[in-house]
Image: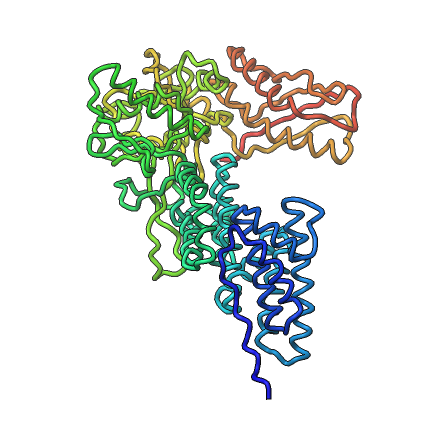
Length: 606
């Protein structure tokens, strides 16, 4: 009796620079038993991956010669064609293995078919991507050992491709792209990308944590002799990408930053901007990154300040958003804070976010998830600025000057006689300002040279903190000082507050009802006109105000206050200008004829 044939061994020869004789060997294997054909398929898959990931021409030529002819396309099209040919061979071999009851080869083919099928299904949505990477992870953990390295290459390719794509998009979108590399180890990244408050979101992964996903696959592949040279060939490009990634993704937010803590919902989500960290008398620029630089804050000359500002400016230019996250302990001395702010201003920053922390929202009472870094934003402007934003801030009607003694507030250039120093009293005044100036979205702030960071944080919380923010934005007039003294602010604020009717009764008189769409637009405008009433500034607030409106060709053309209060011409003119602004965007689409009507706003019942 003839001796039994020995199983065909797997081929572990080097993949780069594949020898021409390998084509004949692979051809002979194609005519062998199912085990030999499985060895051939395994080698062809390795050659495909060597050609893809090692960019090796010899491996590519050997692959196509063994497949019986060259591809009709190049790049991704050629890869897809080769994958389809391998899949057809795997399907045929699986059928033959079942006929011969060779369960080992059948199992190999089943895993190979699953791998190649996933390759041929490009993900269109996140769920597809999750399924695809799950297939690769399953092959690594539970599949045939000969296919684990090929699955690792695909996990490596997913992570690398995702991270490379992340550094190409604008800074604000990079993390939302980069975190999809986590599909290499999990089924979902929904918790990170959910449209929810930062307090309920897990911490963002760092650049090094994301890179570790790829490094894990590299190390496993390097331990396989046939893949070590392919990994080495890619090392240069991978190191370059790693450096780029660390310079592009947001720096880690350190848990030991000595930041002021506030209740959840006080501050806003930060922009994940570059970090400047005032720490132990030094300012660390672009903190948390390998190229961070530290400068002393005890600057004595303009040249030293210019050097500090240049470093901050370089960081801003690299990021491109004009925003910085300022990290400092609340007790930062006033002279050091002044130096930091001067450098930021000279670096032409557009927005500074003062870092604070708030508690994370825990899934259960026993789950202590620490704190999340939040921000109190401050827009940078100056009196001589020519940007549209600078001109808008220069026209702000509420001005707060903060110095070491506390805040002073001016409204329309008139100073309030007294501003409470305690947080609750200050917030009450700010909320009154918000009601008295309902169309003002921002407050401009100037700072004295003796301001401490703690004072500035408390002021920003009063102006824009909490879910119900009195004002949406705060602008720092970097080269500004306190407005010239002009009294009368208390009386002016009281007059405006008396006309700040939040829910007045609206009476609309018109010659006829309009079409349903235009009637709803008209009624919405009538309700919105209540924001114009504080402009009247009457000494004795009336119980009702009637506004006469005339429309022509569907647009608001004329407005009057009837009857116009005596000795209040400036207030009447301001109300009319406000009405024109509020009605500028309104279009009556179904009624182009001339239309006169009146809107009467009645003071709400006390």
